[in-house]
Image (cartoon, rainbow, N blue to C red; front, side, top):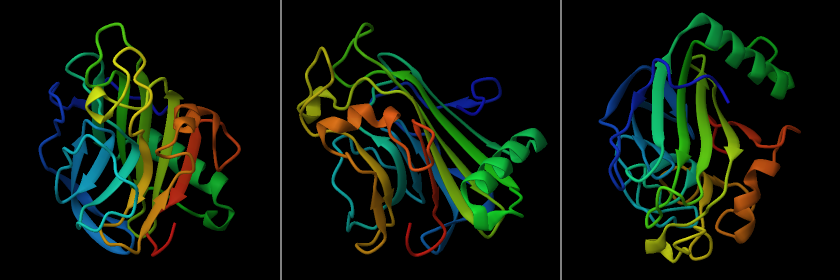
Length: 227
């Protein structure tokens, strides 16, 4: 995981809650569209221009115009347990780390130099219908740009549940029902990407999967028309 907690803002500890609208300091390009506004949503979603309170995930693509990034879209209830942290950063040390990661994972980006990073961390969050003793998930999304190229890193530290009880999940295990969706939704029906295992029982093992040979890490270039 990238460092979090110390200088971060927290989202409200309410069911299906979101951050206020966050006006970001640089344009962030996602599926060819430029955005200057982000919401951090408790239910495992970072959205552009509009908040996402929906707690039962749908299969991508969604045709309702909502553009968002979903490291783990499921019914989080941080009011019961856990925190959701976020921060926008131009800290030189963090930018160096982000630049190094992108160069490592994309050989054609050897001169990439990040100018902006946005880190969102869901720490030990449990599910709607759970309790202070039910399983928790810890995962993170890192958005990175140099103003032209945009990237997302998903870091899965610990995934133990997939579903809130309102989505058919078991109240003790948080498994079953309509399970978590991970990936990207462009807000139209043509631009989207789903991480394999989304909305299946295998999504609980997402921390063991990868597209960059580091289990628990997925890295994507997300500014173009396709991912």
